[in-house]
Length: 238
Image 1 (cartoon, helix red, strand yellow):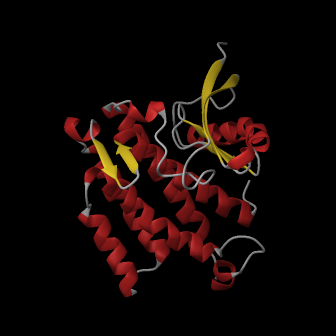
Image 2: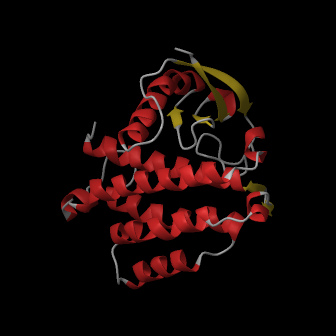
Image 3: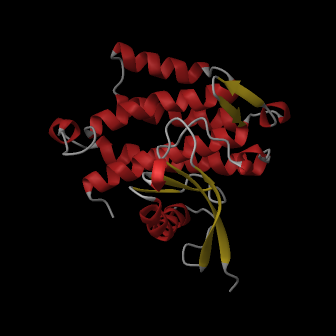
């Protein structure tokens, strides 16, 4: 069996402290650590867990196939290093995604988001609002997930009215944050799949950041997966 290599793209703060590892050949997969060494040590298991999640839902990935990793880029200058710094543009972010890649990302987004909704949908208020020693309550994580969905798409594609309406309904109290998460799955996937050739090739400046379609897909999935895993750990879901 051929051993696959996953190229790793790192961002870390001063003295290689807090680090995020991006696995760009497996869009959405990340690993975090208080130091670069810790983050790299956690990366193989993070890859394996992500592969298993996708494979269990019918994705064409072999979760048990052998692989190795290789650091190909390490960014140490930025505004919010180690946290998914939006100003970072990795070399691979410049590659225009194919329609097939976009369709795969849209499907993957739906799987992750639906599983997050499933995890939190049956929780009592006591569980949703419980304050942990570190971080925000689960209710806070759920509410936090709503806005970035609009933000990432808007950066490249402009406003998505269906997503804006869902967020507005939540702010008015018409639906809960969990219901808003669920309601965003279909319009997000449809907007991604409907991207034109011109949209897939865009390079859009936003302040200090430059956005491309691939960077949008990367951050959309990474952010979704990061908080899916945060909730899973909080609930001790294997």
